[in-house]
Length: 230
Image (cartoon, rainbow, N blue to C red; front, side):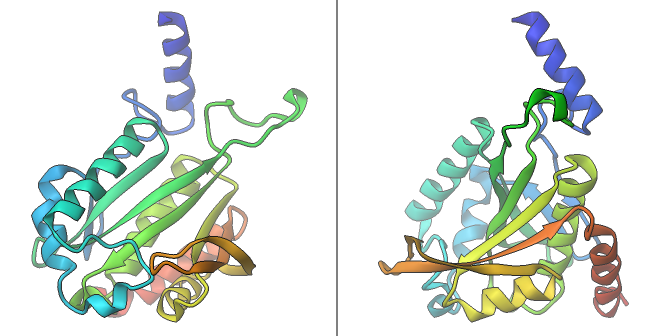
């Protein structure tokens, strides 16, 4: 077991992971936003952030009260411990207030023929960024865009994935517009793909970014953030 763990640690170091684990990315911080690994201490802030304009969250997984927020955090912490999700509390750096949440999820490990394998089997080939929601007053402030820039940088520069996917309820026009504004490509709409948060059977709009596209997308995102950084 000790030898296996040491081999994993060497693989994680090679591919940008910390000794504690490949997915231990820690705090991600920009000029507008600070992404902190989600924990129970964020519950009060999540509850407060989710109160205003709740009609906006009909199609999104957003906790409505303290009980729901505790369950939400517990589920995502368990996902992190199982290497199934890496969730963050989104914090406005200017006010130091929790304004939402976002996460990495749906890690993909492709079945390569060994002679073509480009990375250790324990390293994901693709990942999804999802579960994103923001308090109403944090929307259209550059916070989401900078948060995604930080997360995409981890995905493409640290984890070196081949693709990042975004997925949202096809009826959620605001979410779709925000994803498209990042520079993601619309791959299509999957019909009857999942249970919607409003009880409907939802179609899901799926978008992607490829590693080959990332350098140009990164430049565009950085340029678009200049208006909020000045």
